[in-house]
Image (cartoon, helix red, strand yellow):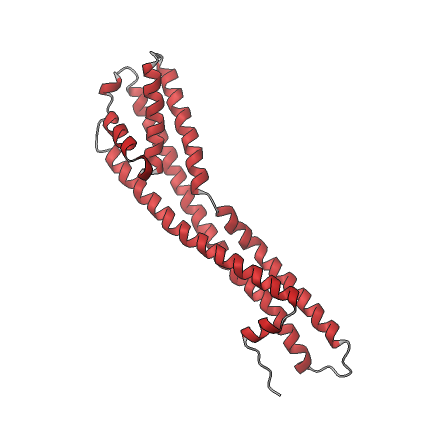
Length: 231
């Protein structure tokens, strides 16, 4: 007699524990794909916004004008623009307090930018750990479902007087589906995690480089009035 080995049939005929494992893995896969697409478009938007602000910054525009522009479009500004705004804000605040020591001005601005950098990186790296967890845990969860399903199948076979390949195959096939779903959830998550980690490292390097370059500009302007600050 021909057996129906379609995926849907194997899933519906699996034991309750294996079905729960499969359902959990499918939910994890769906969530990881949601994160993947969100991260893909989010990082692309961040890179584009950073590049646009960097071009504007190096076009020679007055620093105070850039700072005013950053304040007007705070909600839509790029991470690099927010770094610039935090550093410039602290620099001007110290100037208003009559701080004349160039080192104190520069240290204050750098600390403000470093704090802003950490906040930006926390946002940029959000959900990245979830992809790492899905990629590392899903195969083992699928393997657990497979082991449980095979054990359940052999327990059922122990009550049979005659065991053939036809009686063993369905139970083992049902169990192996759990491993397949685990790999289906894990492989895209691992690939996406590696890709996003590399992209985020590039963004971090770009932001850190900007901090150093802007710090050098502020250092040159410590002896210049805030209204005349330029680069």
